[in-house]
Image (cartoon, rainbow, N blue to C red; front, top):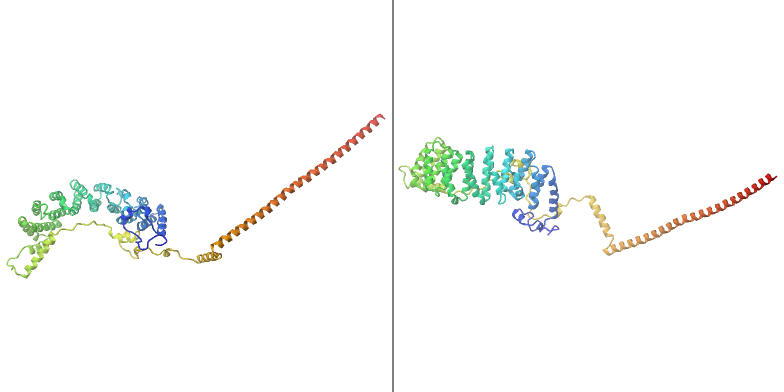
Length: 499
């Protein structure tokens, strides 16, 4: 282990999000530099600059544990009311982060709901984020929100919302039944465009478990006579042909009704009807052979060359020419080709996977121009992959300057002054005793000087008292002499008066 307690034999970063959620935050034992970087970056989440928030969220997405990476969601929410250009850049990064670490934003799923005045590019990103955040705990509010979008004024957004419902149902199989019933409700009460998109999504959901949804398949077959949109009719014809064995009585009748309206159908519907005729002919030739020949004749003379070419290819494989020998080499080739065609038409189709419309962004660096425009621009450099083993801590140390070397030499010189610890403490104790004696001497000197200073005013006061006493004696003498002179003058005056 290194100084930070990180085991060099363990992976440096763990991408398993489930393990991050199960671990207690106190159990993390990461490198001190790693912890310092996360702690310093967390402070920047209080910034008002959207570029700073985007950079910090990209960093936390890459290196922070899940309980600390969740702090990015409130910071991002502050910028979802900013200018639409800033919203687009922020939501672009959130879409990529939610695709890989959805737990960062699942607690704040409601802040990605679509507002009525959101522009089209913002609505598309929010729908993609909602599809990524769908889980057992968040699927309830997400489905309620998605099923309110078919009433929106933008038809393209409505189609995207219905496809997002299908993505949620494929992500969480437990809610597939609920999504099917809600889509069937849209089929019976909505406009034709909504019905067409809902039928396409239902077709994808039925491929996951068709045996438990036979009643829904029959209901789809009945809609074939009501729906007029080409995309929806194509999906319905495919459902009837793919699950023909579950509705053996309904499928031939559907082919009979389609043969009546074959000339008025669109090209994509005609091609799908042709495929339906081949599937029913291969699985139930007794009941559908005549219908199969009739549709082949209609297709052979159709105005569209794609339909004509498809019909001629099928006729050459399933119908023999007159006078054709059985041992002809071309006959063996046709037989092998016919077997391949059976496998192509009757082979069980794979279950469709969820498609992310912004999957190209997942390999590009977050926050870069290439990530926003979904392709590498000139000068783009991808970040290297994270190491599987922790690198040496010395590679993260800053470069040393001349001042650092001078400081090291001074510390080394100071450490060589004492040979061992005892000398260091002995010298320190001697210096302390010297300081004590010096302080005591200085205290005595201060005491003597203070006493001398105190004696001086006393001497002055004694001298002053003596001077005052001497002055009082002189005054008394002068007063006595004055009184004598007065007495003498009085006596003289008396004598004069007598005379």
